[in-house]
Length: 298
Image (tube, rainbow, N blue to C red; front, side):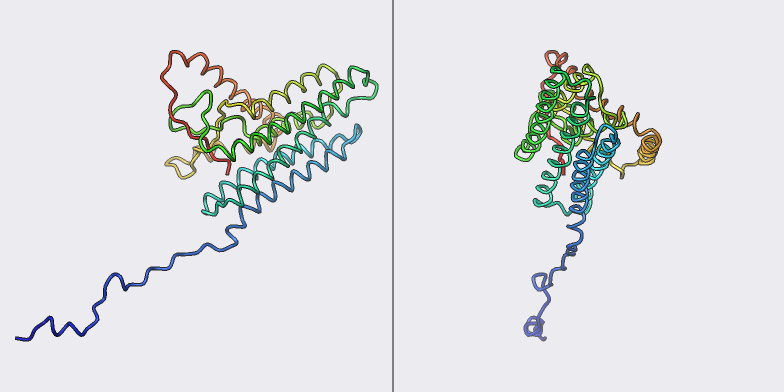
C-alpha cells in the first residue's frame, strides 16, 4: 500500500497564511477635500458678510441685510461639512481645526460687527447726544463680549471631551453644552434680517439690543444644554415624515424668510433657558442626572 503521506509530502499545500489579503479600497484624495470645500464656503460667506457691513451706510442699509443672509447661508454650510465628512468617512484633525477657525471668523467676527453697526453705529445723527454716544460705546463692548464668548465656546469644545451640563437631558438624547456659536450668530443675523437691515433709531430699542447681544454671548459660554439635532436619521424606518417636514420648513423660509427665521432663532435660544428653568424645579425631587455625552460639531 502506498503511503499517502509520502505522496503528498512533496506537494505544496495551500494554507490560509499564504492567501494574500484582499486589498482595501482607498478613498480618493478628492473625498477628503470635499468637506473642506464646504468649510471654505463657510469662511467665504463670513468674509463677504464683513465686507457688506463695512459698505453699509444709513442710506444703503440693505448691505446689512446681505450680511445677515450670508451668515444664514454659512450656518447651512457649517452643518453640511460635518455631516458629509461623517457620511464619507473623511473626518480628520485638519478638517476640525479648519472648521473651528472658519467658525471664529464667520460666526464670531462677522456677527459682532453686524450687531454693533446695525444696532449702534448707524443711529441717526440727530440722536447722538452724550447718552447715545455712551450707548454706542456700550454696544461696542457688548459686541466684543459676544466675539470673546464665541471664541471661548470654540476653545472649550476643542479641549473638552465629555463636558457635563448643569441640566442634563434624557438618556439617548444628544445636546450641546452651551449654545453653539453658529446658533448665536444665527440669532443676530435673524433679527437683522427680520428688520430688513434697517438700523435701530431709538435709544430704548438699542438698549434692548444691547441686552440681547449680551444674553446670547452668555448662553454660548454657559453650561446649559441645547438640542443638537444630531439624532435626526434619514435612514430611519419612516423618513418620509421627516423629509416632508423639512420640505415644508424650507418652503416657509423661501417665502417668509424674515418671519420664519426670526421665530426659529428665538425659539432655539429660549429652549435652552426653558430646559434650564425646568431642571431647577425638578432637580431636588427627580433622580440623579444620567450620563451625558455632548454632540460633535464636526
